[in-house]
Image (cartoon, rainbow, N blue to C red):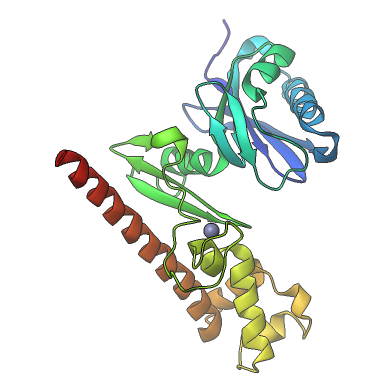
Length: 271
Ligand SMILES: [Zn+2]
């Protein structure tokens, strides 16, 4: 009899599409596989790569399509969850507005497909099988942008149009540096991956005694958030300060957004 506890999770990235065949009850990973995204070919080429990835991972795992309950796709951007379409994807070339990824991938693979924002997917993964197992939690990804997700009362909280946990463009300083979104002082300009790397570079250029300078061997281009993290883990005070600051900014944005929610809720109650 077919085991429908196995699902394929797909992570769409700017460079690679990664997939895993997973038992969603136990978290056991049966197979992993990846292919280049082919982003320059546009959305049809990318969805075709996803379909190819699905075929290949099933073959490699020695199973058949009958063993698979469906496909969940994590996408880097905003989505129309009801229609199964993309609204806006970051880091992918071409036009991604109103692309029916769910229906097209389902047609090409003959399997049910669900879409979710990638940061929400990560949050759910951490809640079910990772660092936040069984706990109500907030997860944040500090990449080029800042993504996030919330688990409340044991359920992934999607919120209005699936955007709950998106903190990147909440302003914590109305006179702060300009952000790509047009606003000022967004969390993203202080705590994203590039912001963390930039603070590391600044510390080296200003001649602060920091392990970051040793780790990059004097080459500023080698300073990444990972390198700053390595220095912080080794106890470097400057690197720790950079991550403490990022944490503080995220915390402040979190408070701002929850206070806003309370204000909105109370004003609605007063109507
Ligand atoms: Zn912004």
